[in-house]
Length: 214
Ligand SMILES: C[S@@+](CC[C@H](N)C(=O)[O-])C[C@H]1O[C@@H](n2cnc3c(N)ncnc32)[C@H](O)[C@@H]1O
Image (cartoon, rainbow, N blue to C red; front, side):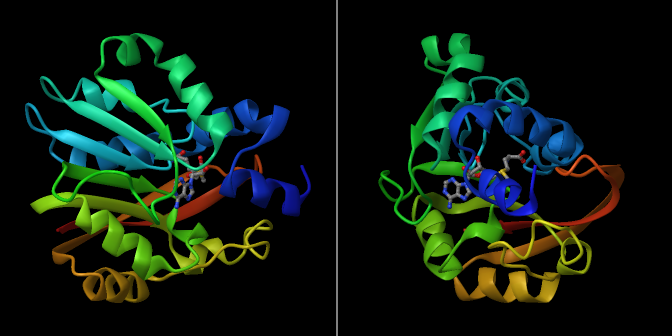
């Protein structure tokens, strides 16, 4: 796939290619997603919101992390919402997971709704990131944990699709953004992985994971 088309698919998987793009993202991001789930230290009866789950391939791992977890996935791609519902049909029927179409810019939940929020590889696409982050904090319970993961600027800058609409951050820039959006008690982790990129090429990934409190 040409770089501009791939960039657009990563931002918002769409059309007939979307399911295949999502599967490739699953392969590329599996280890990172599992690490983020572990870092969130899910406890019984936690409610978790995920921003940009794609096809929801890791939702079962979230649900199985503790008893009675309730999961909501919010993705602005209608194709991804449909695919996530299809792949997680049993969890949806049991009302343990639900998938909604929408943007983190305006989250249709009341304040103090969620114990935990997770967002993996979505930061690049936010036009006014502070607005999105404040909106995420609004729907979190005070003291709840937010885990955000994104490729560090130093690693991302050389990927061929990045010039087509990706905003890049190093750790300092993302921390400043989170602090100015009201998050506190911030812990940072670096995830290094040698593996497949979304282009299919082998790369040495440098991913920042930040866990902070609302
Ligand atoms: C690069 S993919 C990452 C998918 C998945 N989190 C993973 O780790 O493989 C980005 C996903 O987030 C969705 N997305 C990006 N920004 C979003 C936003 N602000 N609100 C809701 N969905 C968003 C896209 O539609 C896409 O499904």
